Amino acid sequence: MKRFPPLRFTLYLAGLCLGFASPSQASDFSGNEQLQSFIQEMSQEHEFDANRLQTLFDDVRLHQSILDAISRPAESKPWHEYRPIFVTRDRTQGGVRFWRQNRAALQRAEEKFGVPPQIITAIIGVETRYGQHAGRYPVLDALATLAFAYPPRSSFFRKELKEYLLMTREEDLDPLEQKGSYAGAMGMPQFISSSFRNYAIDFDGDGKRDLWDNPDDVIGSVAHYFHKHRWRAGEPVTHKVKVHGTKYPGLISDNLRPRFTQQELLDNGVILPRDIPRDIKGTLIELETEEGPEYWVAWHNFYVISRYNHSALYSMAVYQLSELIAAARD
Image 1 (tube, one colour):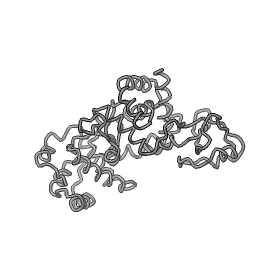
Image 2: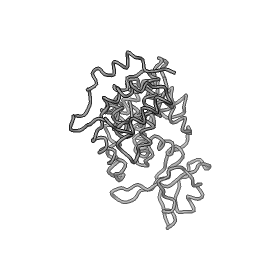
Image 3: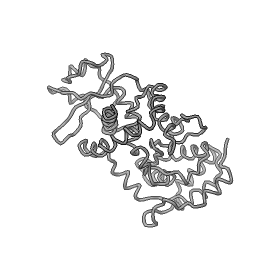
Image 4: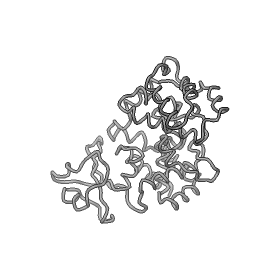
């Protein structure tokens, strides 16, 4: 199994301080028993050198600002406050430019994976404004902070920390140099470490999977992600609907997996459009607007978008931005 190359590992210690938070905002992990257990696990299960990992983590910092940020995610906002963050004129225009600049790669991705260019483009627009805001935290700092100092999701981020170290070893990347979000998401499409390992692809054939600076790889990887989560080409994403009666509230749930037949939706007071495939299932979602509740039926492809981020607000923002981008490009 490939190990950390000694020369590159020595370079981890050079010029590390770029992008770290100030001492008042960060502290180290000295004496952290969970970290020591993690190092032993990586050594025993994945053949990492324990001493070199210890040297690596000696330069990792815990950031209070990361713990603050994860406690107030944008998805906790109501729809009428969430939507203006992501569905904007600026992101729409940026999406049109991105589509024009990367038309060939987007077309090739659609032909290979069946995912429309506007959906791929909207994901990148919502995530990082087409690469303009891909994150400022060292990924190793973010994952260690959440793995060892955020009990509510420590097991998840401990797993992602393991995936990150494996990823950087496989890709021959310096684990201290990669930057990302406060949750450790990376590059233009904000893949977490496990998603990078499972879904990132080399879409231009240069031998690298570069999600930071290579739009071809970014586009191919997003399309591949949706393909693996069973995007269905040609099927709708969602429809705004009207409701009546007293039964429809029983259909509303945070679970976005489509589970109701169209007849069940109709029988419970959901008025459906007529021009949709009759054999697809959906689920009813309610969005909070300033004028009152708004109702949408989310189909299978909406659920696929939610595999990127499990919030209904996120999936709706991607969908609505994609529609604006497609309309503005015509």
